[in-house]
Length: 313
Ligand code: Q46
Ligand code: ZN
Ligand code: ZN
Image (tube, rainbow, N blue to C red; front, side):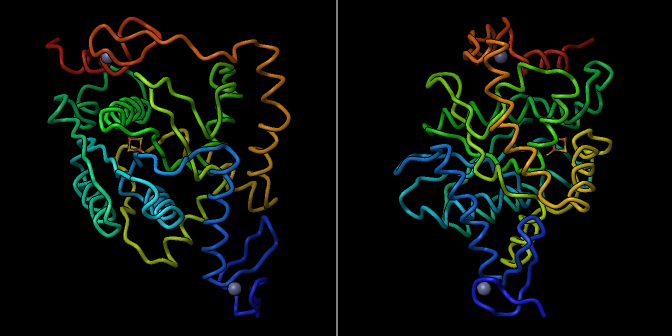
């Protein structure tokens, strides 16, 4: 029988990338320590800050809120921020909202909902209905909605940072997609801390940057907390899923490859890339002429999409 490397109790988990067996308690400690190390390394959180945590109702953001709450307790003001995307199929949005609310209630943290339909008269259901007008993947549109609303709401709530549940698997998938598509602009700005500007753009942090999807799954199983585990009805065919599966296959054969890819990107490739392309400076942001939000154009992506969805013809 495998024994926990730390306490010799029967092991529950084998971490292939570290070749280490751990009992349930020491596995939870390992994940928390990984997050703590990331937060420290990238100077993500200062004492007594007010931080918005994006809670989708899914497992990754549940783990994120649990861990930040466990590490910092009352020394941080945390607000769970949920975007209701208006997905009626399979009752998806209602179930997600319920999960997110329960999580915040359990942890005794403030919970705020931004309702896309009530506040902006648009929804992901409307995106599906009018997909010919937009002609872009659902998840790309949804990503624009979420980024816009989370940014705006966390600033309105007076938060200093916005924490999101992006994981190792998300980051490497986006990195590989950007390499393949030659998106240099995105590549030089990849990272777990994206600086804001104190007025229109909040600083975004990703404390789960070095935690894998498998690890968050095990974390939720051990802790036994509920989350929305049904797949989003609009996720079908999303390219990120295909890239994630690619990394899962590589990881099965060569454990540790995923984290190596991410760490080496930062250690070896990022700096030369920034230097040779000389585009490391922050982009100049204008204010959107419709909503006053941040944009590099005259009208921001959110207002553009909203216009396409709500005009008569
Ligand atoms: S909610 Fe939105 Fe996700 Fe659904 S449409 Fe895609 S991005 S899959 S995390
Ligand atoms: Zn142990
Ligand atoms: Zn706008």
